[in-house]
Image (cartoon, rainbow, N blue to C red; front, top):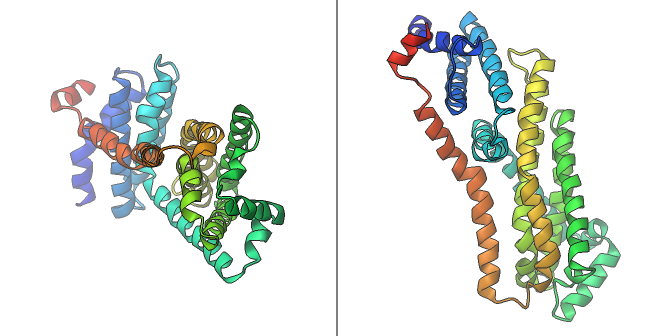
Length: 333
């Protein structure tokens, strides 16, 4: 499409958004979010086909202004908490979904590195997990209790300690993004190598099935959250490395806001993972197999749907409502 035609096609919508930003026209907060998503699509189109055009600069500035208005409006909403999880995070996850795919790609790669390293070097597991832990776990396996390590301490004490530790790990994955995303990947590498070698260790001792019954009860929420936190760190790093038409500082501010919201969305899942590990994992081998499978795949369905499926439908819903009727556009002027 020629730039003149592109401008003509969208001019009224952009002028309407200017009126909204100026406060001359009131609009429903959800419709405002929809307009923002639609405007971002226009900006992406302009950046692709008219990268050096004044139209691209204009749309970039307009997107920044409406973004600020959206979050200023949302701060005074009574149902801010519901909106955050129901609409705001899913829209952001969908908009930055490629970083989620990158995070999962690195996760599988790094985990395989840990698995293969343990396969070729029999001392590798002791280096990563510690000799004392390894020896104790081998004793538990011989006793037919592969999840014995999770039965130490009280329920509530374990849940609190585990949750605090997991929140620290998540914060590191996110905040280390300030090093251009490299810090995030390094932190992910450490955790994935531990996971991969851990899984091979149980496989080598013939206890992979029993360990999976325990590990993945809490591991689905814990590991999936870790990947999403990596996504947040990568977004933060990209905002510094690739500011595009923003100043580097403004790009960082925008990237931090987006990535911090995505990181916050993982906190409930991390807390639930800690509770499950403290209260349920210790009973993994004695609970009915059907219950064990239900819990593992149930948690996978919940968190997988929230970050992969629900964002798509939320975005589709808002995009369908993004372009206002012509009569309303005329009223903008």
